[in-house]
Length: 192
Length: 192
DNA sequence: AAAATTTCATAACATACGTCAATCATTTTA
DNA sequence: TAAAATGATTGACGTATGTTATGAAATTTT
Image (cartoon, rainbow over all chains, first blue to last red; front, side, top):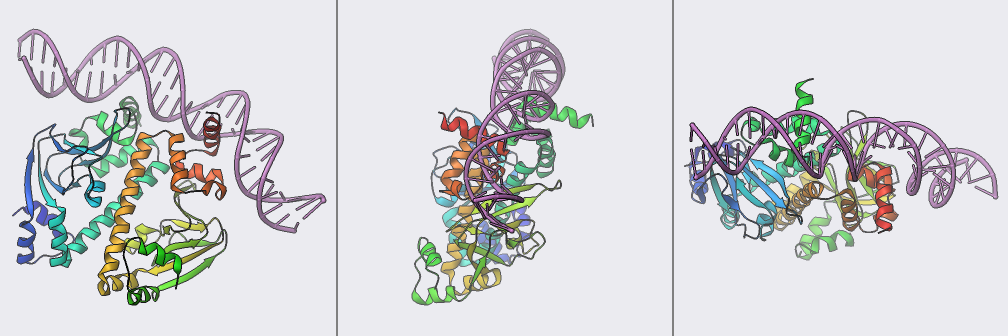
């Protein structure tokens, strides 16, 4: 049905034809234009999304109205307001498209039924959750141990070729620094 | 068997007497003195631990030999090198005791058998994992959005009464600032 | 109780990053 | 194509935090 996500999943578990069809049956397809919201603060969050094509960002707006990006998502990434998704709560994050994007959505209730019917998927999503946990912990360690330029270089590895797709001021935002600072870091990196 | 952890678990799921005994049967008890290691970098990590009594810290040593604390654990907290625990890998973290401590350990292989035998525990530990994921994400957002003194005050809420138990230079380390800076922040907070 | 060690506070100075403002290049829109 | 909007860079300057050094207070050890 959706070759991208099938391929993605086959990295973790092997599915029979039947399981694969069962999985496909709960997927929904979503197309969004640049600048369109996938999720807005306050929304109920029933879905998590796999990116087939495009680029999105998830951000929180603080009490001063400033945006803070927690995650980018490009092809083969998952995105949602996971806090709201897991806890069946209202979104505290916003997610919008940096490029026209194509997504596959999975509804939480469908996923939970699927876990019961096909335990393999339970295992798959548990692996994905532990991986996500580990990357967040690595990111915290990275922010404690590394300089801004080291974290910038690390970021470029995490999101390959994203510099060509995302403006630098959004990358700076994700790194927790100002665009002017990133610009200075980049100059130093180039000249070294 | 261990009233503390039974009480802890009852916040999430209700256990029958039989389930409770099955659970107790896989727990091990561990007593450590101040400054003793629970886990050292390079160790195989088969256990995760629940703190009955005491205080511990988990930290990574960077390439310059500097320690960076990722987590404290006091009574009713869980601690391990979760990355190594989940991925069945060698520890990259060290965990040692700030005070004499008493822990309950659960072995990964026992836990996985338990999941199969009593699905309730699968649900319990999945909830704990999502909660942990969410707190890490909140912590990243907090580091992006908040000033150091806001994060210090937030820290004091997360770990109640820990200021009396843990030296300030370790708290500063956890917050990613120098003890001198924390000292300045504390003075400003008091005088306001 | 005395000595040693640990912890905290403070000061002077250095540095990285933020702020504000201006300019220029590029992209988008009219 | 022209105008407008967007994004990147640079400079001057301010501020928060790091660095180094010192001493006092508190705690632990002898």
